[in-house]
Image (cartoon, rainbow, N blue to C red; front, side):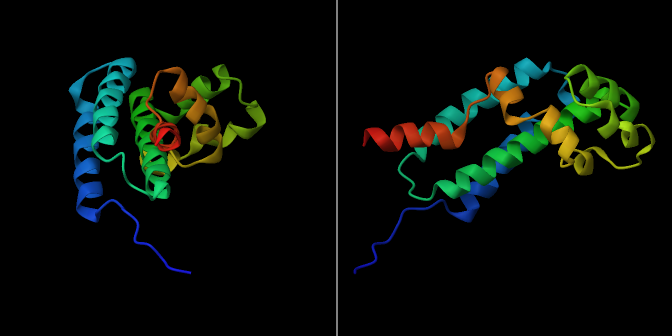
Length: 146
């Protein structure tokens, strides 16, 4: 069996992408979440168009989860206090018994964004409903047409 080399993303390309996404997701630019998602979708669509020939989709899955976490962090920071996060997650339908600890937590937004309750409240489905571009799904669609 002959192993064939595979096209993959360079670490510098991933680093440049994350730097650009940090600019787009900057919390101090004063834009609505829908506007942020629209700008992000436009950039990710063109970025994937350039790198569509890669053969390592696991990198795209990791990037997508990183983007979701950055968006959750932005949402948490916008809510201001953990008690407001509690009410927002309760409004989204999460059980109250799982959210009681949120009122007294001292965790920051980045750490809270990885919490299972916050993760299930602001899930990938939540961001897809806002129109966020899904890198792995779009890559699979392109790869199946080659």
